[in-house]
Image (cartoon, rainbow, N blue to C red):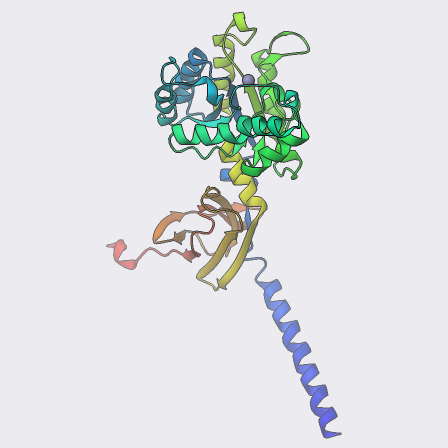
Length: 364
Ligand SMILES: [Zn+2]
């Protein structure tokens, strides 16, 4: 009888405590709730310009436009076409990379049709050299490139090619004409879609307005738009200089809502986002401590992520600290709540958000 009474009291107390805990959580709303933004800087859409085959005059021109407009993109290079003797030697590509507006995507060793290489042991060796051999060579000759993306020549796929690509690449622009979601499936990652600067169905250069409309569609529908380009000019059936420049100017005018990033950067950000785990370590009225980690290889997947955290209504200014580096930011008010947007390094140590108060000594 005595024991039974004790048990009942214990259960009642637990129920009260649990109810109290839940109501406290409800009262505090979702202060501290944190998520990774779909895209860097919470942009609505992504734009990646890729240019294939290393057409020297075109790259030089794209690079001038990209510097002027502060755009970024990727060059899909054929490793076996670059030598120390050719005008487009390794030094030339390293200089373009050093300008800071282009990185590099693997476009094979010799630009061969992947489905023409047989499935014999020799065929597979050649295919491996076209895919992984090219990646090793490009990485060894070009500075600071981790080359985690692939663009198959002629957009030709095969089961064997897919298997080899997946060994050391995390994305491939091997889909069809179209757009990409901001959360590709394992399958989508190796069939990313694109829009071409040469309209194959109409056998003419794409009009700049058509490409601009693609960007508008991507913004409206929150998509990742990848452009596939080669050279510039009528002799290649490509967009002429004024056309492609006016398109780039259009992209630059939309950077408030568009993240213009390289193929490798987008792959890193979205893959990290897909594998992220966020834990709240401490959540008080003046301090929030978060752990933000993913289970990917941190030597490759080290791109900063943009987080969105709901903070208390009386946090007018917030100091964000990670690894002794701090930034002072102002939360944005959305639907009556306050949200802080800030960049962090995943797997880079705990992140502390502190309600920031200006010291009284500053008044005098
Ligand atoms: Zn090509």
